[in-house]
Image (cartoon, rainbow, N blue to C red; front, side, top):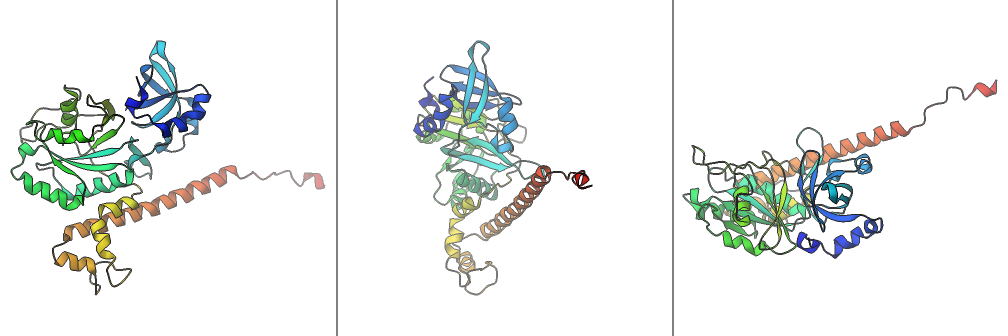
Length: 356
């Protein structure tokens, strides 16, 4: 296997140089299971596990290997197994807050060039959810593309597409149907050797069907048509990457029940550029875009240039990010305090004995 087909380039080669000198081999994570990772490298495909040292040195969840990562390994070809020793620096990553109350980052996909945000055009379509995905996609460092699936089940596809374009702000929008093979060829423009695409979206939007269409077979399982007419419920249970026949790689991910934000301030600016550009003309620099005189954002809403629901979404996401920032700050302070307590030298009860 030629590593350039998997996305290997000079940046990764430079980052890997020190590990190469130590006798390690470069490989890329193609799938993540419970205790193992599928890795493809020049010698073929193996199942890898994390070394004890890497496990010991890894403090946070986001430091573990993720699908799309390049890793330094020692393969054992005769066993089809290997050991992962190091994770190379990521040039991009799609992250979200891990489920639960802990403030932890979860890497959904790493080293991606393009994010396909898949949203079906049936009852699942939700512009506000689309905004959340766009926010995280912009923050990832990859280029977002909106894919509106199941156009054959939609009575007003042009209207839905226009609604998506209103929140996309220049992001390409494609309305497709895998069932009818409608407009599928449009997506091939993003398939280039060494380029990685990640498919993201809720459960049941048709990500697996897109994978199967371009791989030319039933690679990913898709459920049958349900009684309510909602075709193809997503059944992927883990993240996995595939090599496309046309060139490039594509990552399938399980459907996300909730999209919890993670450190996406820059993404907020990109996803809501229309509101931020209008806000620059507000009379007050600290304008809340409510009842202040001279508010350019409120004026834009009255003139039909910005939807009122979009401003509500912007404020909600901004508050969510501010809350997350405060929570992270508190967690960091508690961690530092715990570290100081653990490293503080215990008092010597016998330090005065020699004085008597």
